Every structure is written in C-alpha cells, then in structure tokens.
Length: 189
Ligand SMILES: CC(C)(COP(=O)(O)OP(=O)(O)OC[C@H]1O[C@@H](n2cnc3c(N)ncnc32)[C@H](O)[C@@H]1OP(=O)(O)O)[C@@H](O)C(=O)NCCC(=O)NCCS
Image (cartoon, rainbow, N blue to C red; front, side):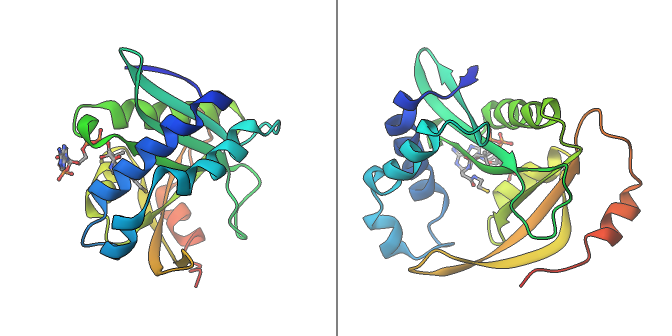
C-alpha cells in the first residue's frame, strides 16, 4: 500500500470508503436504520470542506493499492478542552472492509502518527466508540492506552459513548506511564 497526502479530488473516494466502513463495522453498535440510510453523499460535503481548506491542519493521508483507495487517516491538534498545547489527535481512521486485517491499518496509523510527531506534537489522543472492541484492541496493540476520559458524542440522530486513548509520540520526552495515567484521570462528560 502506498500512503500519500489527500488532495481535494479525493473527497468522493474518501466519503465512499468512510460509509462502506461504517456500514460494515457498526451493525449492532449503532442504530441499524441510520446505517442503512447512510450514503457517501452524507459525508461528501464534510470531506470537501476539509480537503479544500488552506489551513495546515487537519492533514488527511490516503492509502492506495494499485491506484485504488483502501483507507484514510485524519490527524490534527487535539480539540479537547483539557488538551495540552502539544497534544495531537487521530480524528478518523477507516479502511475499506476488503482491506481489514491485512496490515493497512497499522501502516496508516503509523503514517498519521509520524505526521503529528513531525509537526511537533509530544503525545496524541483519539476517541473511539466504547463498544468498538475490534478497533480498541487494534489501538491497544499499537501502544495506545485508555486514559480514563469518556464523552457522550451527539451525532444528532443518536448519542454514543466514546472513550479516549492516548500515547506518547516518537521523539517526545519519555513521561512515566503512571504519571500520564494520573494526569488524565479527569473525565469528560
Ligand atoms: C480499525 C481498523 C482501522 C484496523 O485496521 P486493520 O488493518 O483491519 O487492523 P488489524 O489487521 O489489526 O485488524 C483489526 C481487527 O479486525 C479483524 N478483522 C480483520 N479482517 C476482518 C474482517 N474481514 N471482518 C471482520 N473483522 C476482521 C482482525 O481480526 C482484528 O480483530 P482482533 O483484534 O479480534 O484480532 C480497520 O479494521 C477499520 O477500518 N475498521 C472499521 C472502522 C473503525 O472501526 N475505525 C476506527 C474508528 S475510531
């Protein structure tokens, strides 16, 4: 898989992978009628807005095999109210279901983490659906740990509980893991 920065023209392919991944990953976790109705057009304007922006963040990377998009990752400074200045965030990572379990997720996550580390971030967080145990295991295998924070994510048609994961970034001063855990005991509602 080749990884490159996304361009404005990638918005539709990203929206299509995004929706295919949601429909395959979230039955039983999110309302089925919402998943059934979900279309790439629902996500397209958001991705167009993101990719057409001139701001340095977010950065979106796409993974391609034989010219076909298999997944993407989006990274940015953390938007959390309690975030330290040098805390980045993996906002989204989604693979086409056909690419699950083949190493593409690790490659994309590593690429996103490298962009954050190169951007001067010392640590990173991400939010994941509490019930998304497959993704949570994936993050834990990649060195992320739940820092104790949770939040109710309002998707307008449903509310879902998210949990926060955290990790130090390459090159960051090593902080004792216990210290990081204590620091992040503050729980969001
Ligand atoms: C989470 C994700 C990025 C991980 O990437 P990946 O390359 O598939 O990672 P892995 O190869 O480590 O596989 C992750 C898990 O999916 C499982 N898996 C692999 N292929 C699968 C398939 N065809 N169907 C169902 N599960 C599959 C793996 O066995 C593994 O589960 P395990 O932890 O029980 O062993 C990717 O699976 C994905 O896009 N999932 C759906 C979207 C999602 O949940 N994104 C995260 C939102 S916060």
